[in-house]
Length: 395
Image (cartoon, rainbow, N blue to C red):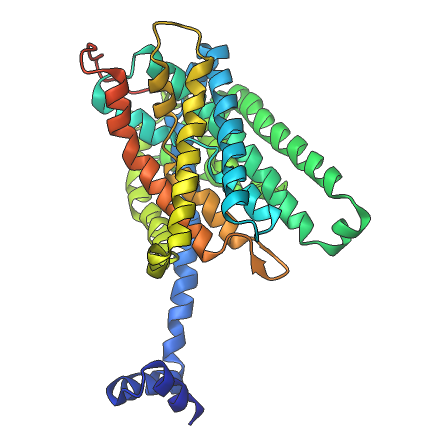
C-alpha cells in the first residue's frame, strides 16, 4: 500500500503508470537502475583518466620548455587573473555561499583546454606561428598550475570538513603540505619520467608482443593516476603527468610503431569519454536555464573567464605577436573546466555539496560559451590577411 500511494503521488494518480511500475518496485527490479548508474560512474571515471592522459599527450613538454619566459608569464597571469575575477564575481553574485564555493568557482576558470586551442590553430593552418607556440606552451603550464590549484582547493575543502583539523588550527599546515606534495609529484614525475621512460619502454619493447604499446601506455597512465590518488591528489593529475612524459619517440622499437599513441587510444577514448560528458549533462537541471539568478551567474563567470585570459596578452613584449590573439587562444575551458566542476560537485562539507546544481549549471554554460567563442575570436584576431602556415601536429 505505501508503494502504491507513493507512485500515485509521483504519477498524479495515473493508473497506467502505477500498474506498470508497482511490480518493479515490489520485486526490486526497479532498483537495478541504481547499479547501472554506479557502473556508468565507473566508466565515467575511467574516461576522465583517459581524457586527461590524452590532454597530456597533446601537450609537447619540450616545446613548452623552448618557448621559455614568455609562455611562463602568459600562463601565470592566465591563472591568477581568472581565479581572482572568478572569486570576485562569485562573492558578488553569491554572497550567501561559503568561501569554499567561491574558491572552486575561481579554480574552474584557471585551466585552458590545450586540445581545443591546438585544434583551432591546426584548422586555421597556423600551428607554426609565434602566437600558436606561445599559447600552446602557456596552455600546458596553465594546466599544470590549474591542477595544483585544484589540489590545493580540494585539500582545503577536505580539511575544512574534518572537525579535528578545524579545531586544532592545522588548516594552513595542510594547505602548505598539499602545495608541496603537488609540486613534488608533478616535478618528480616529469623529471624522473623523462629520464626513466626511455629505459622502461626499451625493456618493454623487447617483448615484441602485438598491442604492447597500447597496453604499456594505459598501465602507465593508470599507475600514475593511482600514485597521485595515493599521495592525496586528484587521479587526473597523475594521468596528465603520464601523458606529458610519454612521447611517441620512446616507442620507436615497439612492434606496430607505425601507429601514433593517440591513434591507438582514440577508439577507447571515443567509447569511454562520452560517458563522462553524458553524466555531466544529466547532472544539469534544465529548469536552471529558466532561473535568472543562475543565468546571471553564468554570464558573470563567463565574462570573468574571457577578461581573465585576455589580460595574458599584455605581458607579451614581442611587437610582432598579436596580443589579442594570445588572450583569445587561452579562453577555452573545455573538458578541463567540466572535470573541475565535477570534482567540486563530488565534494561536500557537513553533508552539503560544495558546488550545488545551480552553480554547476552556470559553470557548464561558461564552458560551452568559452569553447564556442574561441574559433571565431581567434580567427578574427589573427587576421584574414595573414598568410596561413602549413598545418602540422604539435608533436
